[in-house]
Length: 204
Image 1 (spheres, rainbow, N blue to C red):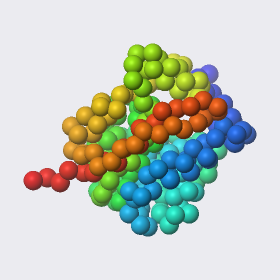
Image 2 (image 1 turned 30 degrees about the horizontal axis):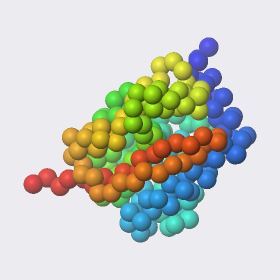
Image 3 (image 1 turned 60 degrees about the vertical axis):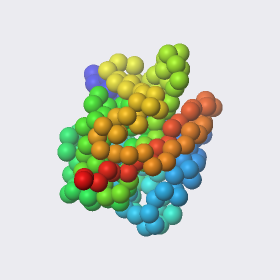
Image 4 (image 1 turned 180 degrees about the vertical axis):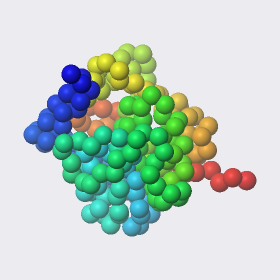
């Protein structure tokens, strides 16, 4: 039995049958937070966007959205481009903006994803990640994420503090343009999110 597939199928079923979880509302709220930093009618890559919840609010605002992921979920709100987890299947500088919305903590080597994002992005990157301030906060963040994703084994849980995300992106050729801390709600639980807008540092 493939445990990871079983977990994914279970999660797809919950998301498709229980809209009250709040993923649609959460997507609309976060888009409202960062929409002023997006160029008009921009081409946007949603990395790890899975179900495609961000495609609808962004398309309604005049943007063109491509969703990229390594797994095709059974439940989809937008078309999905599949890839093998290494090089993105797009030429250099294909998109105005790339989004990494609560996805980097799911991957074992986030710097590899960030490097590919830098390669295919012309202007800026939107990063949204769950934040914590201390050891107890990290424990709760990890447990909550495992419960939401039905993943208790082999899950990277690469959560970082605000300063660590900024340092990581800085080391990979990005500068921080704007940031906000906001609270979102999912299944009745309040989550502290950092919303970061990074710009690519031009070579000198």
